[in-house]
Every structure is written in C-alpha cells, then in structure tokens.
Length: 117
Length: 117
Image (cartoon, rainbow over all chains, first blue to last red; front, side, top):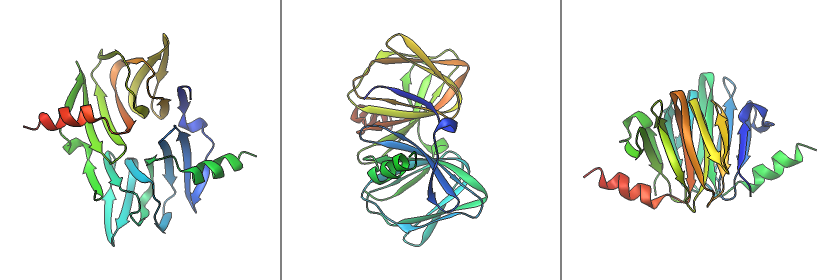
C-alpha cells in the first residue's frame, strides 16, 4: 500500500455500540480507530483475537477486565492481549480514545465499507 | 502477556533523535510510542521494515516522503508502510505525536531497557 495521510474529522464514522462511534484508519497489519463515547455510553463485555492497544485523548474511559475497572484519563494507555474479555464505560463528559488493533479488524473494515454504500 | 495500564507521564523516556524523546508501551506484536519534539527538532531520513501508523496530538509534525512534506496537525493521522523512507520536522511549538509500530521495534525495546540500567 501507499502512505496515507488523513484528518480524522474527515473519516466517515461507523457505530461500534449505542452512543459509541469509530473513525478507522487501516494499515496492512494494524489499524487505528478514533472512538468517541457519548456521555453514558458503554461497550458490553466482549473479546476478539486481536491485540488491542490504546490511548485516552479526552475524558475518561474505563476498561473492565476480570471485574476490575481501570479508569483511564488523558495520556493513559493500555495493552489488552488478544482474547482478553473486556467491557468499557466512560465518564460524565464522554471520552475520546485512540484504539489500535493488530492485526486489522476485518469485521470493522467490512462494516465500515458496507456503510459507505 | 497480561493487560497493562500506564500513564505515559510515568513512562521513562528515551532519546530518538536530538530534541526528540519517546515513551514506549510494548505489546506483543505492536507498540505505542508517545514522542515529543522540542521546537526545531528533526528526525533524519530513515526507514525500517516495520509498518508505522500515528496520530498528531499537539502541535505540528511534518512527515517528508519522496521529498513531499505532509504537515499534520492535531487529529491528523498517517500510515507509512514498512520500508518507506521518511524524515520528520515539527512546527515552532514542537509536537506531541503517538506513533504505532507493527511489529514491535526490538531496537527501541533494547535501547529503552538498556537505558534503565
């Protein structure tokens, strides 16, 4: 692939969960996903084989693993190895988070591309 | 590996180039690196087999590829496929950038771990 440069404001969003949207940028073996939580939005417990890393950009995102809530503010980061069950919730002002997945989430790519139709 | 949660302010920095420091977070097959450019700092032309993705958090980072400067501000992102030669410079106020590498940069891990001695 060729180098890609984007402004995330110009990336079409797709819905990850109710009140949670993502704006993806796909590489070859990894991807970025800028996700925005509306106040009160949550992501239900789930897992995926993909490794997930991330950084909180604004607000608070809590990642719940093994019933322990890790409440993360700006400039706090994380690594969730593949297969680790997790859920998420945000603070009263919502949250803006950069997620990284390795490898690329083909399920996200399929959904994102299909929503462009 | 186990899940990891960190505040990047508490991650020991290492020097990437004169006036450019990084704070890494290592996953299994990918890594984050929060890099901070002092005003006027530059990264000389180089390449690596690792795919690189990233997001500008503050200030301006220009990525120069094939003699074309891509000046990126906050919430602008990029994908540089492995092997693409690139250099970088920043704006007058420096820059804060999140870089992602896939796979992990073992050269960074070796340097970062050796500097803890």
